[in-house]
Image (cartoon, rainbow, N blue to C red; front, side, top):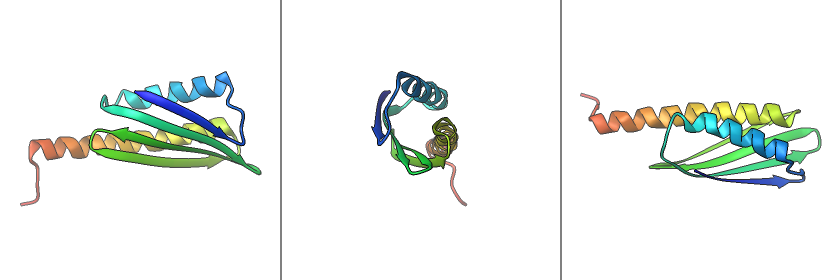
Length: 102
C-alpha cells in the first residue's frame, strides 16, 4: 500500500505522519487489495480537516472528517474508511458467491 500524505496550511510533523500510518494500518487489516492512499490534512480557521481517497480493487473510496483537534479528525476519518472498506469487501464477496435477488 502506497501512502501519500500532504498538508494544506499545516506543518506535517513526524508524529502526524506516524499517527496517520498507524491508523491506516488498522484499516488495511480488513482488506489486502489497497493500492494507493492519498491523505490530505488541512486547517481552516478553527476547523481541522482530514480527507482521504483510497484506491482499492474495483472501487475508489473517499472520506472526510472535521474536528477541532487534528488527531480526533484522523480518528474519525479512519473509522469512516473502515466502515466503507468492510462494506465494499462484503459486496465483493457477495458478488463472487453469486448471491442475487430471486
